[in-house]
Every structure is written in structure tokens, then in C-alpha cells.
Image (cartoon, rainbow, N blue to C red; front, top):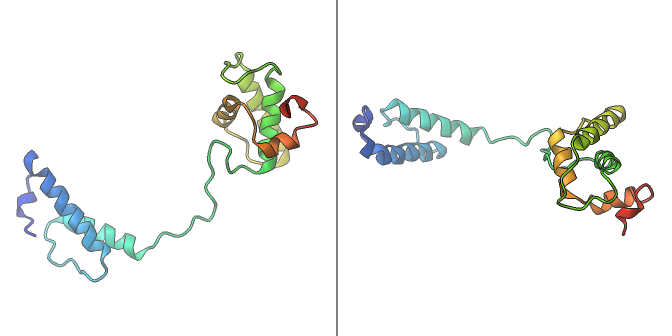
Length: 154
């Protein structure tokens, strides 16, 4: 491909440039192509970046990813967070009601203190906020907290 039209690019040629850059990336991903005919530095840069990605296959992360919504928290941490939420939330609370001012912060502070004492990473405020408004803990947490909060089983 001739690189001369890409030195200064009028707006009507941008689509053509994007196509050329995508083509250079696809050629870089192919280990058979050497890319000697790419004259423009942007085309060479895209080629080299794609070549690096093709050669260096991404390694698996050493630590599994976690979500902020409690899906992959350890069971103990979920129980701690829900215990703090349920201790600060009134027993008459219904899903969809707003929390009284400061109660989510109080639940978060309790969860942080207990998690740190247990040697766990403290939860983010956002996690406690999301779980509070979710309303009901997961089934395994309900069974763990059944004795403390019998109203959960109903």
C-alpha cells in the first residue's frame, strides 16, 4: 500500500486511513508477514504492536478477578458484610426503601472493622451500598445468619 496519501489527511480520507491501519494490524498478527513494505510510521507502529501481541500471548492473571458486587467474595466476608447490614437496617425495612442517613456508612464501618480483625481485605463502601439495596442476602448467607436473624428465613 502506498503511504504517501497519509502524510496529511483530509477528513474525507479518514475511513481509508482506518482501513489501512486495521490492515497493518491484521498483517502484524500473522507471523508469516514481515511487513517490509510498510512505509509510513503509523502503519509500521500498528504492525509492530500487533506482532508483539501475537508473540506475547497474555498470561493468566496470578490473582483471580473479583467483582465489586460480592459475587466472588469469600463466604466469611459476605457473612460479615451482611451481618453489618442487617444490624444497621431495621427489621421492617422493605426492598426499595431509602436508607436513613448514615446507616450505610455505619454498616460499612462495622464491616471494615470486623474484616480487618479477621485478616480479610475490607469491603468498599460501594459494595456495602450495592448489597444494602439488593435487599436479600444469598441463600448460603441466609443459612449462616439464620439463628441471628430469624426474619430472613420467612
